[in-house]
Figure 1 (cartoon, rainbow, N blue to C red):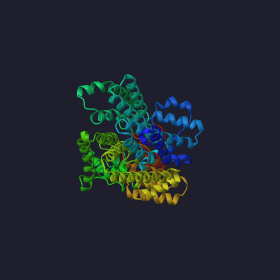
Figure 2: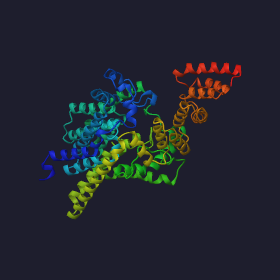
Figure 3: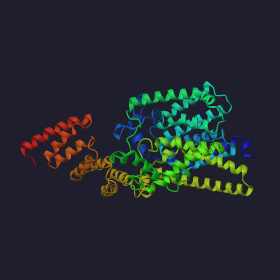
Figure 4: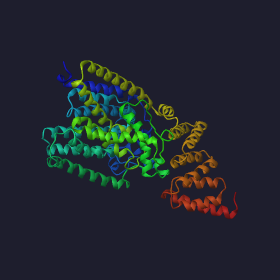
Amino acid sequence: MKLAQRSWLPFVTLALLALAATATSIGHDFTYDDRGVIFDNPRVQSMLHVPQLFRETYWPARYGGDGYRPIVMTLFTLQWCVTNGAPWLFHLGNIILAVATTLAVYWCATAILPVAGAWVAAALFAVHPVHVEVTGNIVGQSELIVALCLALAVGLYLRRRLTHSLTWRDTLSIGALFGIGLCSKEHAIVLPALLVAAEMTVLPAEGWRARARAMRPVLLVLTLLALVYLYVRGLVQQDLAGFLPYPIFRFLRMSPYDRIGTMMNEMPRIAQLLVFPMKLSADYSPNDVVIASGPALSQLPGFFICIGTVVLAVVLRRRSPVVSFGLLWVIISYLPVSNLLVPAGFVTAERTLFFPSIGVVLAAGAVAEHIRTHATPRRRRMALSALGLLLVAGLARSIDRMRVWKNNDAFFDQLMKDAPNGYRAHFLFARHVGYKSRLNQSEMEYRRAIRIFPYDAGMTLSIADSYTRAGLCGPAVALFEWTFGVEPELGEGRYEYVYCLAKLGRWKDAKREAVAGLQYVPPRDSRLMRAAIRESTVAIREGRK
């Protein structure tokens, strides 16, 4: 019996594939960002705090106070309170969301593809190895919720528009999914653009006036929700992006042209990660990332990839509308986090490819459907064999990669293997082993990180703080001086700098830096700085050493 004749079979097989790719995470711990956002964050450990989550940033203030994601924070709170913080429930939540998202991708794809092509798209999505950073890390629930909501919203819109039956109830349902997505992670903002892309490609040709009339209610609702979201988010965070720019953008004072050039260097890697990643890493930083300094030949492949994707999306608009829609999906969903418009908090991050990968698999499903209907029997058999090998390879790679997220020990050990040339890998590993009192190894890795890339003021400040807590004020002062030379207006660490200068008996320097630092320190340190000024004044008068 054919796949299409058993309506339940595609859903069951896809659910099993997604389950197989993610189920091994059930016994894992809180790993990497999970600890700062959930495990060490009292805000998500009491139901009494839930109303306050809608007035607070995603990250706690001590980690930068970035992001605004009240719904996913509320979900974390519920999961914490049910099991008193047991990580298995959080990972079970990821598994359930991963299965649900795979099924939502299939449901969305069946609106524009036959069952076989839609199944191929969703199956490739279920086993895609680049998804492991999302499905294996608890904080990936934000990405999962956005992908689930937007896949359902696009699927609903496509179905209703194809049958000319879009009602106000459908419009409000799409709006509700959009609102949940926005309050789970910022990049859900792309939904209106995805609907416009659908109108331009996979929906039947109509005059622009007819399209405008059909889309008007949905776009009005989505625009209103977006404005309300941006207003509320603006009360919590002042900056548009929501995150501090990545260190190379901040501390190297990179121009927009060099930032774009850096991303052109990265585009071949991003394309490869989206299609089938041979190498995965939780961090991409210099020297693994090539920083641009003006135009260079190394940027040409990335430039051709970007231009070629846009050209293909336009050229295939009528000849292969689903492929065109898939390519536009990739462009629209990746553009906000691409560093091409505004600097993001990373150069390349695998988690940001989770949602764009839906566009890739939609295009792959369309290609598979073309082969099924137009190729010779021999070529169909070859394509089916290739698909089977691809699914097995993807599933095996996903299962193998999932072990990296078991706990922090496994994570940081693998990070050093995945990114041996990246300065942040050495810095993060040094900090991890420092918590375990392996101080000699920690200092060695800190030194390596600084040698690779000394221009991350946040990193050198963190290392200086570690030296200060260890009582090593000599090397701490050298790093403080370097840090404030790179970022003169940085307030964090100013008091620790003054404290170390005083410990070394450099009272004049301590007083000078305390006076200068008063304009930069957070309010909680002002009193300490004034006390340091008074003590330094007395010490200078007494000639104290």
